[in-house]
Length: 421
Ligand code: AMP
Ligand code: GLY
Image 1: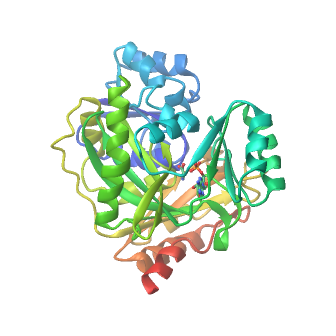
Image 2 (image 1 turned 60 degrees about the vertical axis):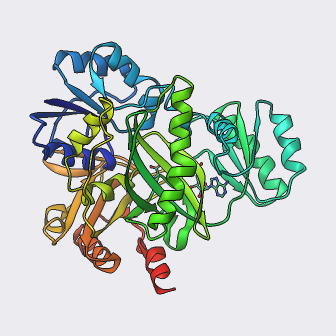
């Protein structure tokens, strides 16, 4: 079968790597892809927001199945457009993607179905939001209602901070805010695959969202990840599925907008009790990289089964080993950074046992590998435990010669500290 993958990040390189290894994939295209993806797929320079261009390309190439990596084209309705053109794709539909595309929609759904999540209020008027925040105990969590590339959430410790956050989010991302109570606990992500009715859990992971060591500095798209997460013991997963994920999938089906595809549940866990922080309508980045390192079954078959409503009897197998990935980013990320610097040593680093390097934003210029974005490389490794995966990943990082880049040196520390407790 001919597959088309949409996206250009580390998540998509990991997906391309897994899809390219599938016995059912005879040809893999990627739009737009990057220099690493070009090693396993034929890349076409179509941006992810060019829905017309993507549908036309899929038709012209006779694509059998499309896998959409990022949220923006899902929320914009790429799945709906492809299916209307007779091309099968992994969803969700635009209406399903509202679980990520509108925080207010999600919170109201949770309230209606008693899904455990932080208490909240939803605002369409800025003054009402300001008055509410002024009258409530802090910390409060202020969230833009719509998509904001991971920058739409501010934890406000004081009244002054919440007023500033409300003004900032309103002017940057337009009207519509959710204000939530602050949840204490430890965060982990649980991924499931669903055909709209049945659910199969994939695996769990822990992201490292802050830019610098010790969980300091600004929030980023994610600077590293570990899978599995010891926060997600089997009984915690069972609670998350029965109290959070299954009621959500049932509610979406009952509304006539079934959710099909990968669902990423961001959970806050306290004393073994999970609450929902957010949903994403896709694999996480960089969580996908560690999931793909551990997946032993065929990814293409699983995704196709979700589209065809046939996952009830699917059985996915996972490595027991731990996978850990370190993100290498351009200095300045998530703020301003420059592009175009040369990266050396990637092939040498990839020779280390258990290591896979996924490109997140790279391009070839005159045969040289160059940085082409903020998060640039993912150095991932498998090991029999967190220590081994981490030492392999950092050994590989040290072989990469890229003075213009940086990474956190403490990915996995939280997992190790928990083990020591
Ligand atoms: P979100 O985009 O909704 O996942 O929010 C981004 C990050 O903000 C989460 O990963 C949490 O670290 C934090 N966060 C969001 N909502 C809450 C909450 N109600 N309580 C505590 N932290 C939160
Ligand atoms: N790593 C967080 C995300 O993919 O949303």
